[in-house]
Length: 388
Image (spheres, rainbow, N blue to C red):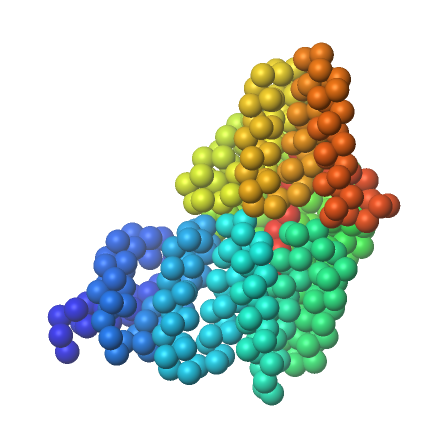
């Protein structure tokens, strides 16, 4: 065995032995990337390429390194195509799709996920089909396509229950709970989250336990149950940090800031949001950055600092429009309308408000109240997809 092959196999073994130890992987990441570069550039190493991809993808996505994950998984997809491994091709397409969703390219995400579903239409692939349907449902939630989301998620739940996939069932229940939260049915969403958490507790699935704890906290917050809200957020944040889930940490920091904001603790809210902004930028988390910018603007609005609010609403709107994050787009437009009113430009304010209503009507049923800047900070809701 040549020296570079021994090097590549050594770091593959390290990855395999450190699957639950993200800190160890992070310490050796530079060496792992060098081994990958040498190995993936050589012909005839397609199986080794796939081994690296499968052992690295969870770490990369948890740490919010989505662009790097796309690069690795696209190389893995080429290897799977060379080896004619249809199952692996479908899984990689689904993972690439979810990474694009996190990066804000919703159309590219949809295309990859649909290709994955098409490839998974074979006997014995019920688990894979359920996984892709679950991811498609979650992606539709981000796009504001609620009817399509429910169609995908109910089909995924039926499949997963039929094959006895308890973990998968919990993930779909989580996303159905999220769908009901988007529709303002918080009590109903809470019931789905609690069913999911019961299963995940039994399986000791810490990564998804943290996601569900975050979403349960959000449901309690919407139901005005503030003490339970903070308890669940703190538990979620501790688990996110333990598991090295930086994108999840961004979500929880934003959501704790929302609780501080509602209690009138504006300086404390800004502190959490600045921490969230730093993390979002470090990991290239565009959705988290857009929501955090909007939420900082809302805090400055509450403080009466018009110029600061204007600057942050404008930056939030720019990113939100780029990635299709409709909640931020609507909220920032409303915020800019408020700024124009304060500055004595009623006609311009009306244009912003009308644009916000256009966004609202585009993505939400007519019986759902608009998320405006006057209602407080936008929470970051997490979907149980991606690694599924």
